[in-house]
Image (tube, rainbow, N blue to C red; front, side, top):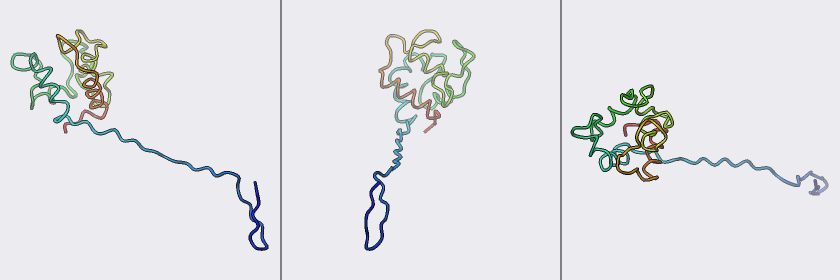
Length: 128
């Protein structure tokens, strides 16, 4: 520690100062209608549309997925469990982790589409 003389008085001056900086990062909220449904429309509704048992068409998909018990594989889990992609059948099937055949059939989603769906689920699977 050094001392600085000011007039007739001496004042202690610290050698260093600690500064605490807090940085908050915000992950953009994923939009179901603008980002997730278009993936379903282009990659899933060929099978999960018209004659498919699980309809993923616009207007039906959200209600058929979120907090709905799985029926054909991993039946102890929800199709989409908000805030928990790891325990959501949709994420397990598109990422190839388990719950039967990887979806979509005939080729997997891109890594960015899988990550987007994972983020949407982990952000609460909002109907936005």
